[in-house]
Length: 78
Picture 1 (cartoon, rainbow, N blue to C red):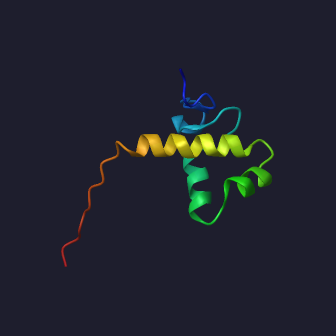
Picture 2: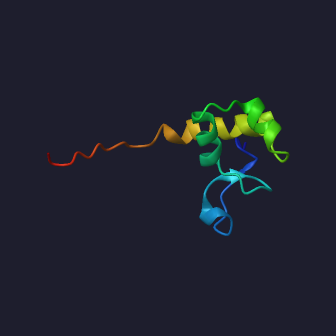
């Protein structure tokens, strides 16, 4: 069962970044819009190829794959 049927990663589209099928709107870009105050409803309303359901799928995708992310803090010498 594909949990993310509308998220694709194709090397020919945005260099393989995960994006919404049939668009060039990346999951990363949707997350940036959310981070700057956008809501799924507002994002879908401003982009005719998106629906709230597609935006929510992108959010679930980002949440699922960020669980395995390793964060390394790099500090510069003072």
